[in-house]
Length: 220
Length: 82
Image 1 (tube, rainbow over the protein chains, first blue to last red):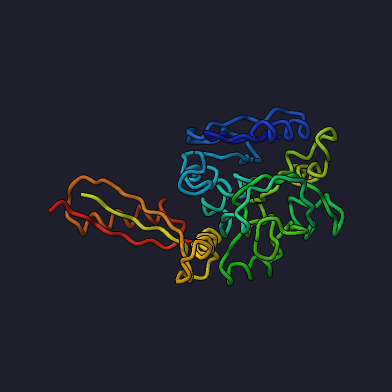
Image 2 (cartoon, rainbow over the protein chains, first blue to last red):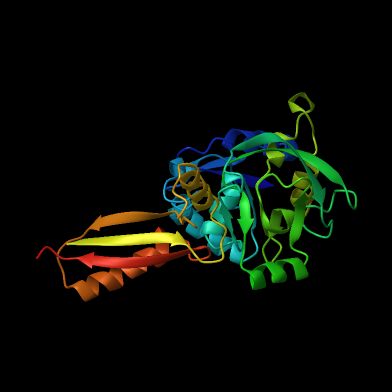
């Protein structure tokens, strides 16, 4: 399976994402620069990496979300291509309108950087099918703007459709309903503030992220 | 000509920065401060054109980039030289 990682100016988890994808697919992902206008043919899964694209100017992810490659990714995701955004990647996906809601400044105004316990809310999704039901996992978090917000009717719809895939234990940022990660209506676009791509190697403190990659890769 | 774009959080969206500013002003003895909302001002320098057309273009800029209308409101002021 051919995968791709998008690189924006000041992405900094692009390499982590590439290492995770290579480890789990046996094949190096394509590293695609944000000025490209089209993904190479055959890409089935795209990762929007973490980082501080464009220095978080204007709003986190705002300028990256208007870059040429994102328009192509958006169009292809509407035809079913799988996309995951972690941390800044999640912010980019909400700014691009590919996921609902917005990520605001953390409620306590602090940058949080720590291993974070999460609850796998459902295993009935393309991104969580490999987890045990009600599993608890630990992924690193490192963000200043991870406070998930959506208007009430939008939030209700996300909840009713079972599109919350991960919730925080001991909410670190003020996110509504402890939401850590959500999917779009089609179930093929996923975003979360924590970093599963940094939880794939026992030497880095844990491997709970592996099943997330296994889940989505198996569906391709 | 210039356009001033004021972007701020919508009412009902928690503004922790504004709240911290208000609290800090209270700590400095400004007891009359009940609330603060923090936003940003973006000053655009535009090629001269008629104000109405400029405002329509700036509105489009706000919708496309300058504001995230999920959480933010914006207000536009067109400033002509004379």
